[in-house]
Amino acid sequence: MEFVPVSPDAEMRELLKRCDLLVSDLDSSDSLFFYGCHSNGNITGVVGLEIHGTVALIRSLAVTSNIRGLGVGRLLVQFAEEMARKKGIESLFLLTTTASNFFERLGYMHHQRDSAPESIKTTAQFSGLCPASSCFMSKQLSS
Ligand SMILES: CC(C)(COP(=O)(O)OP(=O)(O)OC[C@H]1O[C@@H](n2cnc3c(N)ncnc32)[C@H](O)[C@@H]1OP(=O)(O)O)[C@@H](O)C(=O)NCCC(=O)NCCS
Image (cartoon, rainbow, N blue to C red):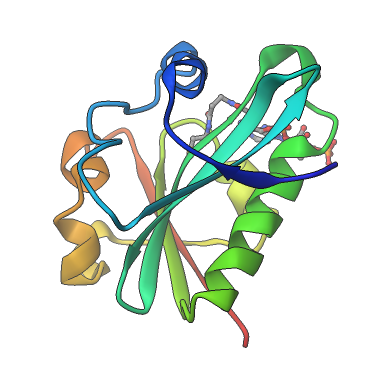
């Protein structure tokens, strides 16, 4: 499966919206990088990195419902981690209301939201997701 840089066009936004993921802040930052995969010219999966210095938020992870459970989500996260390493990122953070078990299996650990770096705390993702319903997780990237 090939993963390529993608821009937040209408098709990608549609996929994120179908998954109830945030789309209001996609144009707001030059620190956002998205990677996706396609089938027959249509986007089937996407993952984003929101970079703040040497830390980044992994976000906008979505796979079309017809190909879930086939390993695409895991490969997308692993690809994003590889891209993050290449960009000098030391730690990845994320918030999730739906996939904490999925991320646990990929080596992400649960933390208190208060422990987040300030740059992560100020992201739209962080302020947009209700503390009570979301898990805050992180992973240290080896070089
Ligand atoms: C979460 C998501 C990206 C996973 O994509 P996927 O391609 O189905 O994931 P994979 O096939 O790589 O799954 C790897 C493993 O995690 C499991 N898994 C997948 N989604 C899971 C979830 N939400 N919670 C717990 N486990 C999950 C799979 O069953 C699989 O287990 P297995 O190895 O025993 O078969 C996909 O379900 C999705 O797009 N969900 C809607 C959007 C969303 O919730 N995104 C996350 C926001 S942080």
